[in-house]
Image (cartoon, rainbow, N blue to C red; front, top):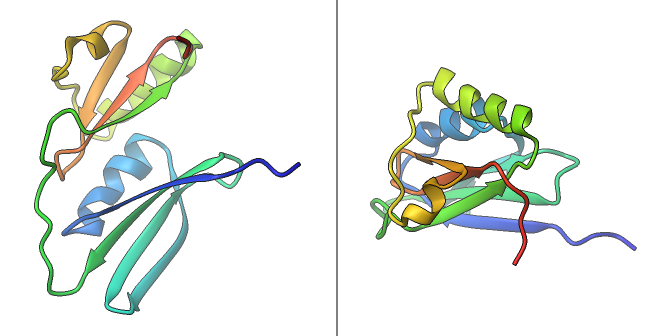
Length: 130
């Protein structure tokens, strides 16, 4: 069986401003990009072996602005302490400092970082479970 792949897509006003956050900070790589495809530019980031991608698009002549809420999150569960510490250090070395979470739950065993569009990423040092 081939596992499904999740792609999270969202608009932005400036793809190039987002690149350092997701590439240098989170360690994603460019999987694909496109320019002026039916009036859209786009960038797809991820890793060839990961079951998820992030896609950022910009529509020519259209502004989308910043996130409507500080509670727009992507959450990555990194249960290995060393892996989590390295991920947090990589974000900080790329120039992105943690911000306080809108929901304090995410500050427990986690660090939250905000991208240039105001969307947030939580790096959580725990396993996921209900």
